[in-house]
Image 1 (cartoon, rainbow, N blue to C red):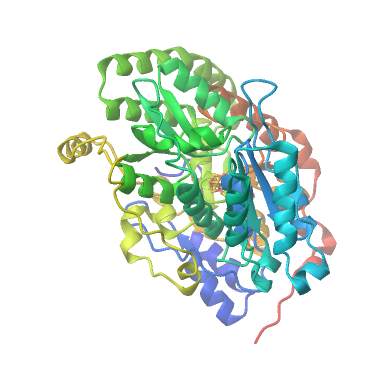
Image 2 (image 1 turned 180 degrees about the horizontal axis):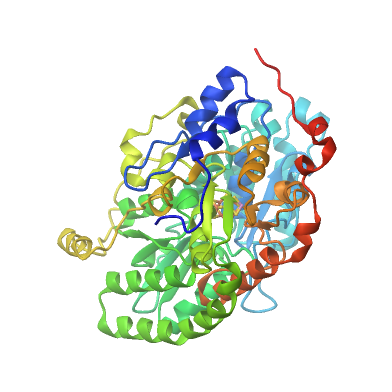
Length: 543
Ligand code: CFM
C-alpha cells in the first residue's frame, strides 16, 4: 500500500534518530530501526536487551506472566511472592474485565494478593511465609486454583516456589497449586514471562478435565485478554454465528474452561506474541491446529470469521457467518462514512507491546489514516517479518534461560482434528494454518519500523513527522501530549473500549475522531517550538 500522504525521507529520519547516541549504541539501535519494504522485508533486530540508560517502554517478565497471561482468569487466586509494591502496582491497571455468570461465582480479579516479603524473608528465606499465605488464601476462599508468581528477590535468595506449591497442593487436596519462576529479570522483557506462563498453564491446567465440550464448531480464543471488554464483543459475535467458545486464554476465562480447552477443534490466535507457544504445544499434544486471526477492525473481523468458516468447511456455518457480517457491517459503514471525511489523510504512529502496533493499523486504515512508523516493545522477529524467519532466529543466552517444554502426542487424547490431506486442501484454498505474516508485509513502503523504541527516539519522531496521533501507553501519554500531539493508550484504551469486532470498531472510530479533530492540540506549543527550546535538549556522553 503506497502512502496517501507525503512522508519525509526515512533514511534522513533514521540518521537523526541515532546521531546523538555514542557510536556503539548508535550501531546497535541502527539494527532495530529499519525502513520498510513489504516486498522484500528487511531484517529487524528484536528481542535483544535494551541498552542500559535508554528509557524503554518495556516491562518485565513478572508483568508478562502474572499481569498478562494469568491475570485475567477470574477464579485463580494469584499470589505474588515478593515485596508488596510488585503486587500493588500491578493491581487492576490493565483494565482486563471479567463477567462471572452468577453474582455468587468466584471472582478474585479485584483482590491484590501478596506475601508482603520483608527484609527478614530476603535474609532468612520466604518459603515458610509463602506456605502460610497459600494456607490463608485457601481457608478464606477455597479456590479451585492458587498460582504463585516469583518476583526478583525470590530468584535471588533461591526460594523454591515449585516445591512449596507441590507440598501445599498435596496438603490441601482439592486445590490446584502451581508456581511460576517469572522473576522480573528473566529474559529481556515481558515476552519471557509470556513463555513461562504458557509453559505453566499447559503443564498444570490444560488437559485436567476431559468432559467433551458441547457444540458443533468448538474453538479456543488464544491471546485475547478482555481489555476494556474486548472479549465480550468477540463472544457476542461468536454466539451470533453459532460458534462455541470452549476456552479463552485468558480474557473472561475460568479455571474449568482452561482445563477443558483440549476438547476444542481449533485454536484461533489473536495475539501471536504472547501465546503462540500454547498453540504449538496443543497441536503436538492433542492434534488441534491453530490459525492467526484478528478481531481488531471491522474488515479484519469479517475476514477472521470467514477463515473460521472455511476451516470447519460447513455450508450452514458459512451462510450464518455471512448473514452476521451483512447485519453488522452497515452500522459500521455508516459511522465510517460520517467520520472518514474528517480523518482521511491524517497520520498515526503506533509503538505498543507485541501485537497491537500491527492490529490497530487496520482500524486507522479504515478511517483513511496512514501509519508512518510503528514498532513493538518486546516482539520477536517473526512478529515483524513473518513466521517463516523462525528457523533463522539466533537463540541467545537470554532466550536459553527460558524452558522449552518437551511435548509429545498424548497417548489417549491425541486426535488430529484434520488429516494431513485436509490441511493441505485448506492451505491450497489460501487458508493460512499455523502461520503469521507479521506486521511489515502489511505496512507501506518507506514507513519506519522500530523495535523497542526509546523515549528519545519517540520525541524525535514526533518532532520530525508531526503525526496527528501517537499510540503508546501511560508512561508516554503526557509527555507526548505536552508536545501538542494526542496520545491514544492502546494498552488500557484510556477509559474506552471495547475496540474489537464491529461494535468495537465503531467505538474506536468515534474516539479517534474526537482526539485528532480536537482544536485544543493547536493551542499547545511543543518545547522545540518555543524560543528557549535549546535548553531542553537532552545531552549524551560521547566517547
Ligand atoms: Fe499481546 Fe496484549 Fe499486546 Fe501483550 Fe501487553 Fe496488552 Fe500490549 Mo499492554 S498480550 S502483546 S504483553 S496484545 S499488556 S493485552 S496492550 S503490551 S500489544
